Length: 480
Image 1 (cartoon, rainbow, N blue to C red):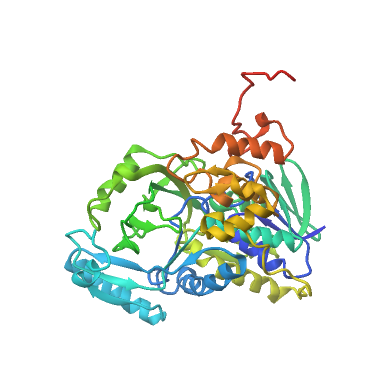
Image 2: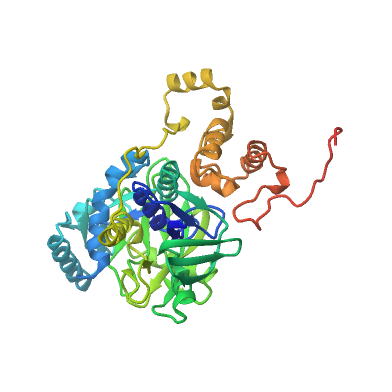
């Protein structure tokens, strides 16, 4: 029997796996997709919000502030990029200016650094400010990171500490047994003492298989985005928000750690939890809303669009609790914005709930730091030359847009929680993120995956097991 089963390997599940791996317990993580970070973690604004915005008295408010404080040290430990670039909430009229004053008061009560700035002060830092903007709330503790990178690094660390990650394991039913729970997937059955339900938009459906009713409900809320290419001169320097509405933070302008710009998201409910397609209506909405806070948006630099679904709960707050009817079944649900910012604090809270009931002993030889990664793009000429002396594959450029070498891709495949798909390689080291969107490097990545995993190229997938890249051979070499 396993001690703990975590269902879902998004950012929350990955944090829990890593934090619980420090204790002498057996842990299995079940993920229905072919990789970690494949749901809301893969498609969001990549912002570590300051904590100024959530409603007073909610878990969102408490855990956002705490999570923001935790990220810097965690990213340092795991060799992940984290940047506190700051943010502005921008007001365009007197009514919105009054809202800024309320947000400042709320931020002050939470000890979130902030101040009100005039248009004249802001435009010195943000020349592309819309003519409508009259003032802004400056939030210097707002940060950005790469959600895929931190989730993968967390799971890699968890695996190094003994966690068993099981991919392509969709849970279809959970039953109560004498000593815990029986978790049934499409492929196997696992008995466990503790279950942690971190299954995103499907958390309500999963819990219902145990209790035979909907105790809470999760609605998929779609967010659609544009991605702009790298530019010689940054379009914006900080995260820019409009004054928030009842349905969210609004359409944002977000610099990324890879020097792209995200524009979005939309925020509307969809019936189909699997629907992560872009829509013309949604993208047109993003375009229309941007003019409120910025001008001269360089849409000619747009290189892609994407969409994702966030799990919005009927309680309007995070759901983090042990089941009242089923001991040792923990729901960690409705983790929408600011879920990414709150994730380390959510994990801290859940681990605390478990420790309140169970005397778990800490491991004496826990691994806290991952094996270092090489980022050739960031190396000096001398450092690159030294790398090539050790391994000539550092001289073979696979992705020209993002300057990713063959050696880096091979390392991403063979690390703990290694890549097995084209998108998995993209998440870990970046080929396909650039201007050509994989037009040059994707066939080479398929070739490397096939060779390193000892598979036929026709077996290599883009993402999930049904997304084959190649259908059939069109040319036979002389030896076949």
